[in-house]
Every structure is written in structure tokens, then in C-alpha cells.
Length: 102
Image 1 (cartoon, rainbow, N blue to C red):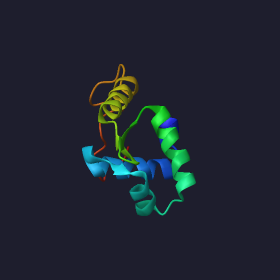
Image 2: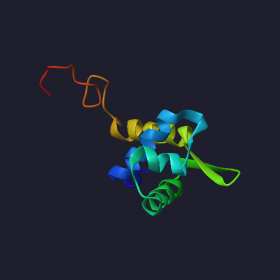
Image 3: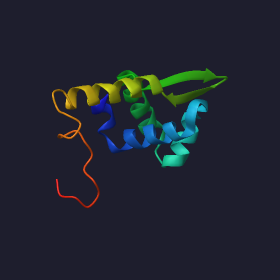
Image 4: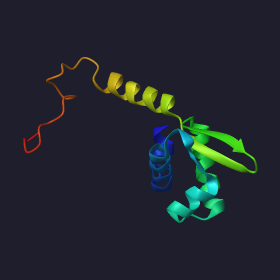
């Protein structure tokens, strides 16, 4: 999942779909919002779908994409669990107050 989001265009697509909510957006709408050509967008949507962080449904002739919020939650839980193993809340995983040196 992280690998698929490491590309700027795919991250832009995912951000847009998160903002779009459960209704999602059709591929053409995504391309228009981001100024990406349809073939390029198709490639990136396929990568995100294969990574398991997008869902797609057919609406007539259109494919409508939406962020998979459950997958996103699992990724965040994994990162939190793995990054903070054995560290107290006052340790490395705790947010640094703004203006404080790390």
C-alpha cells in the first residue's frame, strides 16, 4: 500500500477520492480534477486498486472509484502498531509539541 502511495500522482488520486467520500468519482472526473491523461490515470488507478486501497463499481458505462476506508484504517493501525512497539507514549511515537526541539 505504501509503495502505491509513494508516487505523486497516485497520492493525489487517493487524496481526491478520500475527499470525495463514499460517493467516489468517475475516472473522467478524476482526470479532469487532476489534469491527468486518461491512459496515465488508468495505469495509476489500476496500481491503487491492485494495492487494495481503492474500490471500484460500475455505474452504467462509467467506473466509479472510491477510497477503501477499511484498508486505510488497517494501514494506519499497522503503522501505529509497528512503529510504536515497545515505546511509551512519551517516547519516540509521541507527537513533538510545536516549537519544541526533537
